[in-house]
Length: 65
Image (cartoon, rainbow, N blue to C red; front, side, top):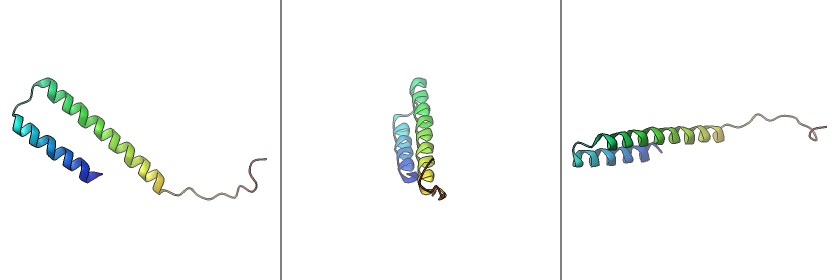
């Protein structure tokens, strides 16, 4: 996941360097994309951690009475 983000960031930097100065609206759109992408990555990491965590076993017997 981190490698993918670095690849995307590198590609974005190359495009920005190639285009030169971007208009303010494009800068805002890129910043919004970065924010949303970061939130999505955080969500994926949260789910991955939850899936890696084993729930404690409980002695529930035959189920609820």
